[in-house]
Image (cartoon, rainbow, N blue to C red; front, side):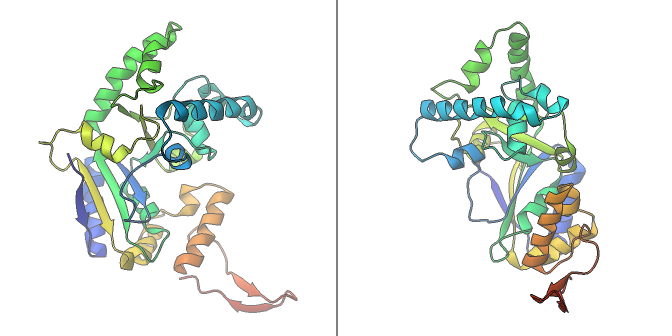
Amino acid sequence: MPWREIRLETLADVQSRMHLIASEGDWAHRGQASAEWKDLRPSLARALAPGLSQGDRLNIERQATQTFLQLARHHLDAADSALLGHPLQRNVIMQHFRAPTRLLDWTASPWVALYFAVSSFPDQDGTVWSFRTTDLRIRTMQDQQQVEVGLQNGRAERLLEMFYNEVPMPIVWLLDPWTRNSRLAAQQALFTVASDVGGDHAQLLADFYPTESNDVLCRFVIPKELKRQTVLMLAAMNISPATLFPGLDGLGASIADLVTHQIRSPGLIGRVFLQRQDGSTLSCVPLA
């Protein structure tokens, strides 16, 4: 079934719609800063040259994964290292450290997705993609039971058939990380993963859900005029780079908010001054 597009014209519309969908609980959400982006392709698909075959994509993915496995073990803690042995879960670790993978990021929180929809590209409308997860989660659990039994017995045929076949199957799973570092926990991360390495997850999800389903695939459009107000509202709710990206990454993203929207995140403590080259203070930057 097609995605239903809903334009949210006021900040009150944004608040009420996000509150409503958050109260239902069984949804996944993805924020994108530009409404012009009409498809949902994971980072690996976006990084690869167009026109490659599934076989070529699988070979490149395999080389990238082998390189990561060889070099990353020296830098990972025990919890992350434990995931490297699983053919799909290892992608969670790779994705976290910005390696391109076939995983597509989602969140269980519409508010987190909303932040990513409004925090950048202030001259473009943003979007929150949301889908009801119940049916896909059930399908994923059924398929995973077959795969995990095989892996426990040292047999990966079913997994290879489903996700590493040169003729991709029309399969998309909802993947929960087995362990969550501070960022995954803060962002309430979920992922979709598909058999087709270059597949558009928006289309795969539309194909999965029957046409008679109502309001299970929604695409909320947030006008560019509301972006700054929405970032301010979210900051007041303690949803900001400082909370979504624990550590220095959050500090850097907070400064990006300051520059883009002239807003001080709760994670930026103190006053920020412009400095002359000789080190003397020139003026105070407006932060809100």
